Length: 166
Image (cartoon, rainbow, N blue to C red):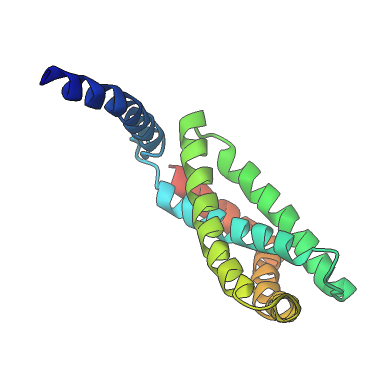
């Protein structure tokens, strides 16, 4: 009789152990590959691009009547993010690309989730007004910074990426 409770516990632990194994496998996929490359520099570069891209997506909602020049900046930020992804991906292994892009995207996503939480703490009408204010202020500034780097200094960015890959 004393074995019946133990047998039940091991059956309940089996799904827990399997989910722990899955977590370990997922975590191992997020471990930086071993190389002489400075992947942290690449993550920082990609992070800024992803922050501008993901934030721009938040601001391109139909319910926001943004000025055309703001929408253009947000579209350009998306183009910059795509360009950065291409630049970073060239010459890296699939594992390195996945690590860099996932790390940067996760960090940007986490920061924007904090913005969403603050916005959602307001009633809907105030939420929309605060989102508009955030988009035309903070987010537009982030997107413009990314676009200026993309349009005015692409060679500098390419050199930083190249050096980090050496």
